[in-house]
Length: 238
Image 1 (tube, rainbow, N blue to C red):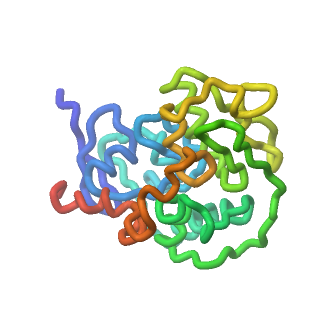
Image 2 (image 1 turned 30 degrees about the vertical axis):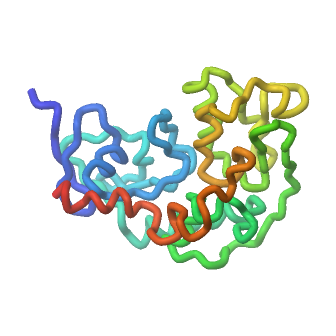
């Protein structure tokens, strides 16, 4: 019995392999499904919900939902994109994102999603939360103003680095990423070479002294929209 099968995304037939999720099959077929917490190589958990699609009419997170033969997936619709814009918008107003000053600008996935969805100003009022910065570590800093609670650093530290440096603490608006020390990041066994130090989609967790090694104008999303690398494989996949 073959391990491959087909299903449709927005009416276009795509091929999947047994065990793949919707988003993995879509990526392989050159179909970009917007995402924020999903990171290739880390276990998906459907936290941000930006990758929500309709599967046979029912909303599901594409990063966690397994592909199945014959299902009909809707990825592009006015309703879904309105939902995605609202989620992206909320990430901006719930934190303090100073994009014009952020060294991650141009490489930031949240900023790139906003550009892709045409968001030039938030539709919700800013919350201006009071958040701290931990710059005690000699090689890495945490700016919680920019954190979007995607959990990538938590997963990478636990599952790839084997260190459990980061954990979520608190609930609701008090939820934040904490470190496994009584004081600060400098007291953990975090290293600049850790996977956790490279997976943050925004500028909340960054290595020091490399911020502008890649100059503005040559960054990942300066000239091409987020997802274009996946979509560029479409013609080859069809």
